[in-house]
Length: 493
Image 1 (cartoon, rainbow, N blue to C red):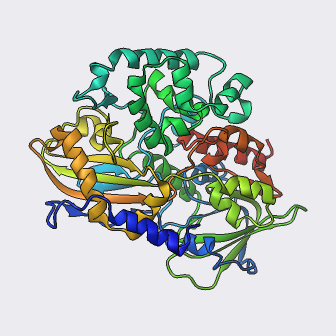
Image 2 (cartoon, rainbow, N blue to C red):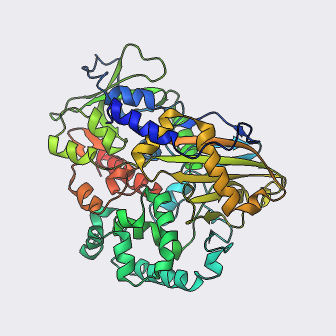
Image 3 (cartoon, rainbow, N blue to C red):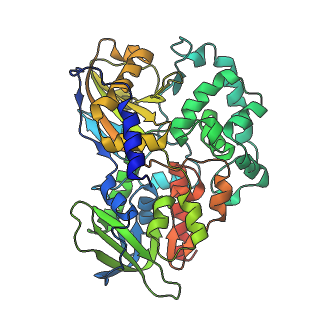
């Protein structure tokens, strides 16, 4: 936690960031979306360090957290008496979407990769048919080239793709669940992604692109993330990537609808959970929360089982009676901070690829064409670019996001878009920039993360941890894997 003095110093640094592009930038700044940090900071700062009150009701399963893992657990347990508690006004976690005119765009995670068992059948059961994004999936704007993957980086990229394809075909693939990983794959967790790539003699000219990829997907450059996790993410080079309109929010919405269709009142939003008290003797666990928007008297539910589907750094703060060593391991992991800017254009926009990477940019890592997932229904006279801008220093990023000066944060992003994606502005007008802040977007998978989370207990009496953090990878597949594990325990399988 930052002290007041540290926060002031960081905000001072933020004030030295590039100034906004004039008082009249020519585009609107939309209202902030993303994290509601006030209730979580109140819990972090100990303002809700109190016993859980008497329960007002009893359920078989209480699920804490309505991100992809919590929603997947609720979906798998929908035939049980469940209550899902979500802090925000709608479930989804980082898998939420917005809408501009008739284009749905992602506020966070935009696509996924694996449609094999158990993921594909799970999507099928939701009535969703994953469709590959149109080609080209990726391009890299570097060294003055509009697409370096079709120019100077083509050869090195194809050699990298060949390496990944070879790894995917081998039994040593670093995959989920990590509990089933072979020793050769686990050895990759002791290396950084950069060390592995250089060991395999990948052309160093690719490293700036791979750093941008790593920062966007994992919150840190290739020199700071586990090779196990990094290579798991790079498996997308050996196959296709899939996206729904609005990104992975489509999965979240389908799961929430499936859960709610069984009965009303099974998802409670605006519920900031401050205490989870497990029982180790077959009794009931208790979950206590307060109204996130209008804090008042705390509320409580008793449950036979609790699925704690929250990031580990936060789960460790609300789970009472946790072993100090486990708590320290869960809270010392780094969390990335992200800004996502959805840039809304009037006019025919042609970004050139589903995902355009900008390794030479200071702020922006990549920009996803939100309209691409619409296929033939894509509008011809307007478009949206979902721009990812992870902070290189997460603490400074959190300070800037707390300060909340949207115009100052948007200006350098727009400037970099004009420089690296000038065709997006050709014959178009940038009408609005809609900003989303993620102060603790996801776990940064540093080397050793897989070994760490494999050693952590995920069960405390009748409380089960189930979050993508449990796989050490901030991915859709990690969340669904953890949900399946928790649901199997509750079902007695």
